[in-house]
Image (cartoon, rainbow, N blue to C red):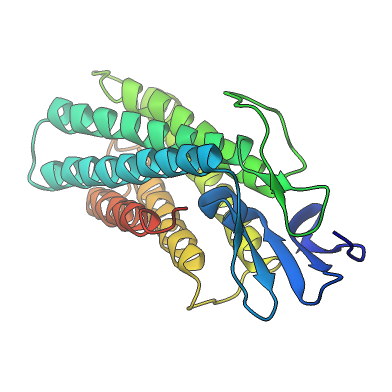
Length: 275
């Protein structure tokens, strides 16, 4: 199939969209998020029907999307429940237990998202085609924006795991609480925010902007709002050394609850972004 050289678009060093002009007329467009989530590229011709990856790859991507979607829905719901229990003055151990289980679901969802990026179909050697490789549980691809974004998300959930485990510790001084619980919380929130920023750049093919007709944009925007609310909660969760009290317990719990709801909503929306 003849075609001209592909036109590349993206953000910084990352390529998020390639466009080919086909010899038979029209264009073929590869977008990293569309290929990863739907296993397809767009063909703009007389009848613009998306061209898709092979059936086995589509099935694999669909299963990963379902795991990620359900994991974020359940993880977000459990985090919201943990925050609600804290607002109702439940025991610290009860809230920590609910948070910890929710964190396991967040980690599962993040790893499924990373697997989607690792195993996403790539632009084929011919315009208007996608090529799928063999299955990988891990690959190092730092020049792909989807890999970097999902890897940072996964890393953030692992750091949150440290925070959640340490939350079971009792009798900590203010300095110990800030070092063992608050610091991992802040690092995890920062990783979430950077991951979300990269996801926005990926879906916008450059600087973030509003794309109300794009389902992928809504998913990323809602999740980024959740990350921002988690960061607000983390800032309010700092233990003041002079008093031993948190900066603001109410903001910490409400920020966690509303941020968790955002991730659950994002998970529901993600269920519709499938092959």
